[in-house]
Length: 154
Image 1 (cartoon, rainbow, N blue to C red):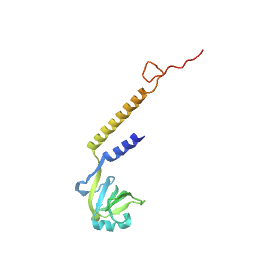
Image 2 (cartoon, one colour):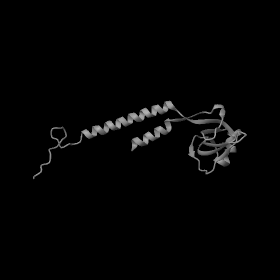
Image 3 (spheres, one colour):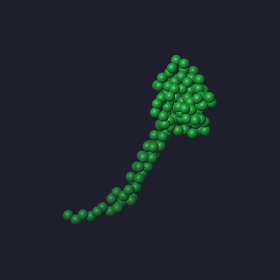
Image 4 (tube, one colour):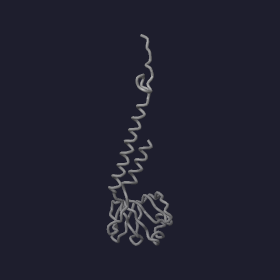
């Protein structure tokens, strides 16, 4: 069970990373991380709470002026504390409050590394299980660890 939990965590963290968006553009349907300006943190306080620096979520739609409507998943404060977003509706983020946009992308190199580590952990678990299976008493006195067979009377 622990091996599966570690594997799931490894896949979740190693396979994806945030890379700067080309031209700072927000594209509907993409998972993004938006960094707010200092003024933006104050302006967005009513929607996301005080002292928020990063907003992570999925872009729902773009307006003509460059503002975006996002379904928010988590927030990061100015102190670096990350919390899940408690709101239930999508929020509008004006283009003027956005300092930077990063797009969540699949990191192939880290994904292959994670796969290699998971494969190694799997092989180690199989080798351990096989070694434990060999050390159990078999009922065969000729093998080390074996016990004499039960005598049965007809």
